[in-house]
Structures are given as structure tokens and as C-alpha cells.
Image (cartoon, rainbow over all chains, first blue to last red; front, side, top):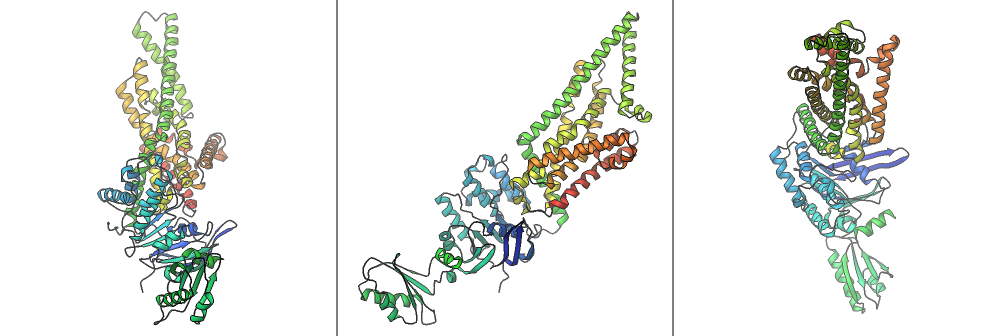
Length: 307
Length: 309
């Protein structure tokens, strides 16, 4: 088994009376796109800051790419978008990126090429020679993302990378993150759970400084162990489904008209088999079907886990 | 994609990173009002000093000529000029006694400097600490406040960051100190009857390292203040307070012997050491200034290296 890109054990961090992290455990597999999910104040940004070495944990273990968060050891191997950090106002976007690339150990020529490459990722090539102080909030965010992609980092931490971006650039950034799968590990925090569900392989729910639950997104959303059917107004033959599938559990949500069927998957029982059986029963009893899917949304799962 | 270099030698990386940070910070300072403000302030001080000096000399010349005329020597211009020079020399030597704190040996050596350069140097050493405090206070605190430091802390050590910032400020102050010598030459050449441009230029070239090294010593306490607090406003207040406290200690120590040991901890104690004739004195003064900068910066770094960014 590959060593994790990031492993935190029982990490605590306190700011005066506020306990920002209360024993966070986290295990991020190398090469995965990992979602860090939690409400405001859950400790996500503090956790990122501890991993980057901006903050020191009061206790616990922090293992980043096989060792402590030491900037010399991690030079060029760790990229990050810090949430609240601002660039200087006077120099141009290109100058900032060139400088940061040079600090990662690149030659001037390589740094110049890298600056152009990462600016293309965030579609900021035409603003490369603009002073950073004249950029809009969204553009500054994109420059922040760009600097995180400089070089060839093994681990990238992105703290709310799409917050403040317009839909097109948010979409492009999601695609850019998705494109990193297998090449490097990316940890993303966001409030947009649909977005995270679409791009991430694994996720952890953080609540009040603790890890509530973590695992593969497919497992968290029960992609292999639950299906749902949305019924149009009309017959609601839920009991017939229950009778036909005695080993499964069917839950009916009348306001949303959603029938959820959860089951224990096995070698001879896949979600597709359950879907076929449920549809057969529903159609046989005159139900009108307006939607169908596997599992539940990450958002629903998150709400269930943190309720 | 590029392959990231594996950094083998932390010490060479440290120096490389510090120089990169210094270069970037210097470039940023030159594009902001920081460099402009510092340059203008220092040029203003230099110009005012030079102008004041030439005016005093002109008044002294007129007064001396008038006195000589009344004494009957005005008929011979050479005699009158010699008389004026003699009287100026006597007045200047009296001033040097004040500068040197009554040290006869030092007065003799100071007298070898062109007077205008010496006055410029002495006043610069008086003003420089406050100009530095007012323009360099946020070298670290400003980056902490905006969290700009996070982009750098991800890529290099905090030590390299502090050293880079310090070198940048030193280069800035040293360059501006060099620039500030220009008014001395301009005013001297334009207004003074017996101004030797070449001699004064060479003396200014010799004086410039003194200002740069003294600036180094002053940057130490300022760097300490900038690392102790996060807000630029608090850093400015602390830097001024720290320097003012040291200045008071240094001044009081001249009058009270019991305070003397404390004055060794202040940069102000060493500013006249550069003017002693011996090479050892000058080297010792330079070493003390560098050590003072390193010492105070190191003290601040003990807080900065542990603090949350």
C-alpha cells in the first residue's frame, strides 16, 4: 500500500479559548482528489495552515509527504492556496509568479515558462503584466490558484478555490483539478458539495474541529448500496416494493416524493438488480417515475452525518 | 510540468532564497511610495543641512569681513580672505570639540574632514534612525498583516525571509544615503567660495559606508519591533519607542557613569567610533553595528519563528 500523501493524527490547535482543532484525524491517499467538507468555523482553514506549517499544532502528529511540515524538505513538493493571503500590490502578476517559482528552486528561464503555464490554467494569460493591486477579487483568487500549481508539487492544498469565481472559471478550475487525478494529490475544501462530489475520490467531514467521517466518496454516498426513485404525483406503491424486496430497506419521503431503497450489495446483488426490481414493482402498480439514481448526494450524506 | 529540484544544501538554499526575497522586496519598494518617501525625506534633510551650512558660512564670512574692514585689513583681499579663513577655522574647531565630546585626539582627526561633509555626516547619523524607523517598521509586520508571508513561508524558511527583508531594507537605505550626498556637493559648489569639489566628493565616498553601517545597526531594533507584533501600526509605534528609549539611555549614559553599561546595547553609542583615526576603531565600529543588527534581529526571530503566520 502506498504511503499517504497526508496523515494527521489527533491534531489539536487552540487559539486562546477557542479550540479550532480537537483531535483531527485524516488520511489522504497519494494520488487522490480529496474533499475536506465542513461548515464555517469547522477548522478546515486551520487544518490547512497546520499542514502548510503556517500554524504549529499544539499536539498530535502531522505527516506531510512522509515527514513534518518543513519548508526546506517540502520545497517545490507542496503547493497551496492559502485562504486569506494577499499578494503585494505593486508588482505584476507575472513578476509574483516568477518570484515564487524561483523560490521553489527553478532557474529564471524555467520560472518564466512555469508562470506562463500556470496562468494559462486559470485563464489569466492576458493579465500577466497587470499590477496585482489592480485585479478583482476573483482574479486574485485565480492567481492564488495558479501559484499553487507552480512546478510539479506532489501535494496541492486548495482552500475554497472556486469561492468568488464566475461559473465559467469555476468550471474550468474544476476540470483542471480533475485533470490532476493520478498525477498528484489534491486536497480541496469547499462549501459547494456538488462540486466536490463531481471531482473528488475521497472526502472527510470536519465538524467543530473533529473528523466526523471519512472515506471514498462512492462509499460515503452509498453508490453501491442505495438507489432512489422520484415519483410523479399519482400512485405510491411503497408497500409493494417492500414486499417484493424483503432484504432491502425502503424509505418513503412524501414531501419530496423520493423512495430510497438501501441494501447489502454482494456478488450477485448490484444496484442495477435492485433498480430493475424496484422499477418492475412500481410500474406494475401504476406509479409514474420522474427520476432515478444511485446512492445519495454528498450533501445529503454530510447532513446525515453531522445532524 | 517541470521537475522540482531536490534541495541538497540547506545553507546555499538559505542564502539564495534570502537574496531572492531581498531582490523582490527591493523591486517592490522601488515601485511603491516607500522608496520615494524615504528618498525625499533624506534628500530634504540633506538639502536643509547643506543649505543651512552654506548660509551659516556666508553669514560668518560677511561678519568676519566686516570686522576685518573695521580693523583696516580690507584693503588687501588676500589678507582679508586669510583672516576670514582663520576665524572660521577657530569657530569650526570649537564646534568639533562639541561633536567629539571634548576628545582632543578625535578633534584633530575630525578636522581633516571637509567641514561640510562632517556636518552632513553628523546630522545624517542623527536623523537616519528616525527615518529608518518610519519607513522600515513594517518589513515583517506588514507581510504578517496581509498574510503575504504565507506564499513565501510555503517555499522557504522563516529565517531566509527575515534575512531577505533585512538585506532589502539595508540596500534601500544605503542607496538613499548615497543619493543624499548629492545636495552636499551641489550646495557646496554653488554657494561656497572655497569649496573643493574633488576633496568633498572623496570625503563623501568615505562617509557613505559609515552611514550604511550605522543604518545596519539601526535596522536591528526596527527588525525586532517588526517581528514582535503583527500590525504595522503597532510595529511602527514599537520601533520608534525602542529607538527613542535607546537614544535616551545613550544620552543619559554620557552624563551618568552608572548608566554606561546600558549604552553599549544601543546603536547610538557607537556612531562616533567610525570617526576615530585608527583602522581598528573603524573595524570595531563596523563589527559592532553588524553584531547589533544580528543580535536584535535574532531576538525578534525567537518570537517570529514560533508565531502563527
